[in-house]
Amino acid sequence: MRSGSFALATLSCVALLACATISHAQEEDPSDKWEQRGDLVFQTMDSGNCDDYQVVEGDEVWITHLGHTVEDQVQFDGNGVEPLKFTLGGGTVLRGMEVGMEGMCVGETRVLLIPPHLAFDDPTKRFSRKPVKAGSTVRYQITLVDMIRPGSLRYWRTKLWTEVGIPGVVAGLVLVWALYAVYQSYRKTAAKRPKRKNL
Image 1 (cartoon, helix red, strand yellow):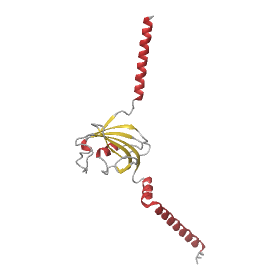
Image 2 (cartoon, helix red, strand yellow):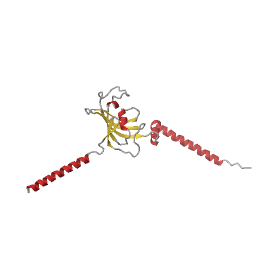
Image 3 (cartoon, helix red, strand yellow):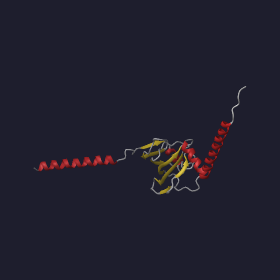
Image 4 (cartoon, helix red, strand yellow):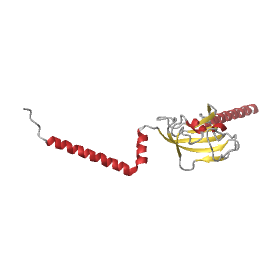
């Protein structure tokens, strides 16, 4: 009787252990893999929507970001409420951020581990004030909120709307309507003219 109870208890423990292992495996993020790009290491947390474009140099991008030191996990950077807008490859942000963002899709989130020479010890950049001590590797979590590819229809539509504004768009539509009205008037006048008879 005791041996049967012991076997049952052992079987129950094995079953519980197996369930716990399966549950833990299911909770693990399948994208929990670090990739390397040169001296930069990054991890994709959320894949986003890659049906349209993947970010390349020259694209206009909007991101949310948080920057921490790897050594003590102190936050030193973040965009706040409004997404940060810039042109990828334009040198507005850290070189490591630009390298790590290439290939991202809208909605994608990546974690970047940026070495010092691609962060605040970058010899190609000048910083009025460095938020971290020299030689620091920094960790950035970046989410691509939106992007526009230069030359696309959306790019020109957005450019027209932001640079010309509503008054400019209205004035343009009025001009087009006026030209169309002149063209229609010319056609009616030409149609009323008597045709010349060939002798």
